[in-house]
Length: 150
Image 1 (cartoon, rainbow, N blue to C red):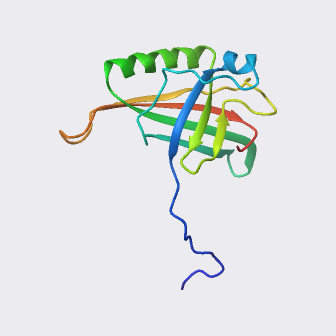
Image 2 (image 1 turned 90 degrees about the vertical axis):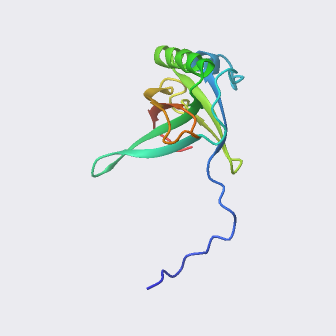
C-alpha cells in the first residue's frame, strides 16, 4: 500500500558537506565571527555533520553535534590531525560547516552557552582501504553537546 499525503521529491538531492572551517574556542570567543583557522582541511566530499537529540526513553533537551572529517593518510595530514587533536583536546574548536545545499551551521558554539562546550575529539580511525586502488585515510570525529539544533 503506497503512502499518501507525501510530496514527491523533485529536486536533486543536496546532501553532504562542501567546506569545514575551524577556529579555536579562544579565537572564536575573542571576536564575534572569528576568522576560521587555515591549515586544518579535509578531503573533498569526505566530511559529515549530524545533530542528534540524546537521551533514553524521553528525549532530553540536549543535542549532540558530530563532525566527521576524512583526510588522506599523508605525513602532512597526520601532522595537521595531531595538531588539531592537541588543540581540540586542550581548549576545543568551533566549526563553520557549509553544506552542499548552501546552508551554514556553527558547531561548538551556541547562543545559550557560547564556547563553553566546544567540539572535542571523540574518535580517530586510520584505514588502509580495501583494494590497491584505495587511498589510506585518517578519519577524525569531533563532538560536543549543547541545547539547540542549528
